[in-house]
Length: 367
Image (cartoon, rainbow, N blue to C red; front, side, top):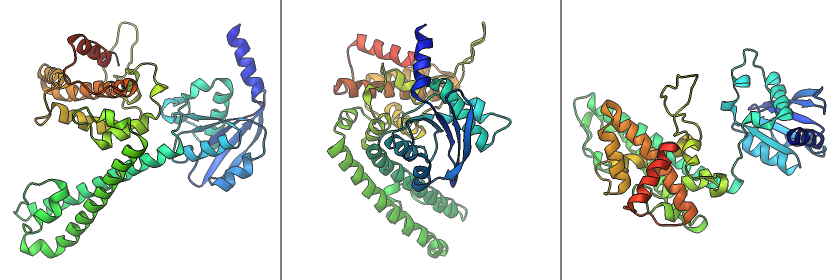
């Protein structure tokens, strides 16, 4: 009885429901009435002006749209106009993404009907606020420069190697200066522009590093607590805080592992329950960043900690793919640990009491 009453209240609150299939230039919409009848459908330009011309001044409506490039600013604008916005997780709606009759108009109508019937069917997500999005963009742009620099460095090394020579080993920051004199004479002229580009990229990356440090210090002091964990630097700690957004969004810290796609998939049917790979859902950049931290923790340079010892034990008994499984497990446990430190505001203890280690192991396995 209570569920029926709640459903009636929900449907009476929003007399109309809109589904929007966002496109890069044009977006399609479908407007449904209180009884699910089709009132209007069409399209508008995917611009602030085009959106406002269709939704400004209208009575409060429930609006459903999918995650994508434009979903953040569109949801913010629609919310500011007074509408109830649901941002659907596109990867969790096979009825739309896997349809054999997939068109923009059909997607918009399906979004509207799902939102009208039960918004939970859309697996809604919440975009971070604009300020956190801007700060996170600094980290993402730095990551793109690092990716471009790595590509150029590999190009230079492979080119030199193809002529029978090799460049000295060095860190990426010192590549342009250290490898300049080691270039073969016949290749120096053609490779010089690439070295100049690598040098310029290194300067830009260092500038972004300074910006990240400033943002973390002035706006997110909680990131300093996460940096007490060996292997977790300014990039990883700030990316974790900005991506999670609100530490209270999870009932328990172990939910963070599932949020970042670090839990195994499940395909249980009767007595069959196969062991599957991790879901890789959630934010891929943060997951990759934490994986890099896990590599350091159980790598040759990682300091001795309870987490490192736990990871090495897993790697030692895992057979051929033992280290890969250990990296995934340490990453999952690290995500749980970082959230717990954020909530409790405690500094990381390399060797906590045995009972605490056992509980942490249990949390990592359950997540």
